[in-house]
Length: 129
Image 1 (cartoon, one colour):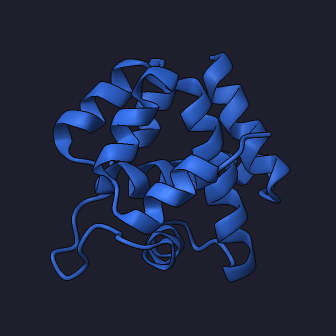
Image 2 (spheres, rainbow, N blue to C red):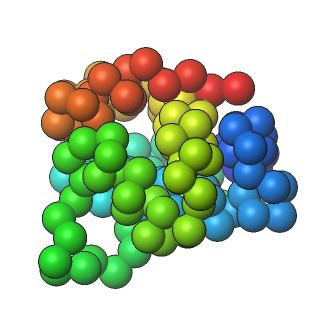
């Protein structure tokens, strides 16, 4: 889908090798969606094509690790899922979330409303490619 191509482009533009982009997308989208309440997660995913929706499934919950509340938490969660290098994770997260926001403009304000302050700022300031 065009949405998938745009998300891959965002990840590649942020430094991910193209063949690793789907795994990076899965980790970023999954970790971010883990932060959203189930109802809002459902609202966001209804606007996405099936190939992207599949990437938004949060990884199995780790009862010892709560959903991310800060950018550092989100970076750590993405790294735990995908193993992105320290210096690569935050730019990839920012690029992918910026593109996601562009793909679901009708949900942007609702997502903003449910995020903790630091992640809210990241979501609002993230820019796509």
